[in-house]
Length: 420
Ligand code: SF4
Ligand code: SF4
Image 1 (cartoon, helix red, strand yellow):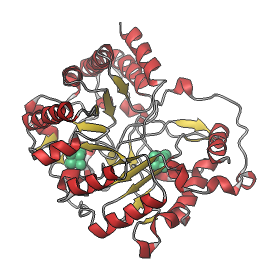
Image 2 (image 1 turned 135 degrees about the horizontal axis):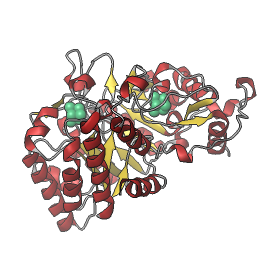
Image 3 (image 1 turned 90 degrees about the vertical axis):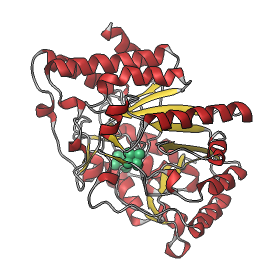
């Protein structure tokens, strides 16, 4: 049973890809299935053979444009930097900054904007008005929110016009939810969801819904219930995200990483996770898992049944890390083109090249260069060079989102992407 479900998960994962959510949101990825990683002899070009044009960034390469409405959040999920003692969130996006973004979008239109950020969109006082203006430009909107406070009628109406809404919800068990996501009542979340669903019917719109869970031991045994809840309200995708450690805040240690479980607890976690994915798939939901997730489940089951502890064999600390996504070896790099295809405009104007790195490639403010300058800033070009040569910094080495790939295949990918 487990084997056939895992095979089926493998097949599904092999056909999917999606950019990452930022927090809790940040983060989903490509399939991460090692079976799909090309195993070719390494014919990578040396750094001095690489066409400098491959290092360039251009507005036309952007596939995922993230605009953070607010860096503040109303919740304090125990594994989130928001709960860190020294964490200082960025304030809401100012009107002036929003005007700069609109001006950029008029010069370089994008099809879709993700309004997820390091905080919750609902914390921006005028987010409804800003969404109206983006929709008026014909831009599709997606966002991950916590839905933790009762939304107004106006907020419900605008959300019903979004293209995709992700509910960041680890469990629907009220008590357990409060242990990981402080100060939220699941009844409020469900009330908000159902009102948006009702508004979709009124407005003849069709939101794509995603239910997302951060993978911790605290919630894992209730995952089948979460998957069936997602199916019951008509969600389109069920996704699991790795717990990510943020060293400077020492956050993830407040919960237990599933991959550190041993013995019967580990087996129960594997069974519950497999069951949740099977329920989601049987009910027609897409599933999206972190890199190598199926193989990791298999490995956890294997070592748990031999009374061994997998985590002690694999731990590799990094700046922002998940201990279970292997680091690239010689001749390999990360399979990540985010520094070409992704921008995250933070609410204070800093521009990030992906949703893991704490680097900033520039600033949105006109007097500080704006987006066009950021595309080819020193930081942006250096990051691309590192990926193209396999000489990665600590963040990319330890990245939990992207699987590894041989450098030659990666260079070919970038060459094809930048051709023409
Ligand atoms: S909802 Fe939780 S995980 Fe998301 S930004 Fe707020 S505190 Fe962080
Ligand atoms: S940390 Fe590096 S590999 Fe990971 S998403 Fe960011 S740029 Fe890509």
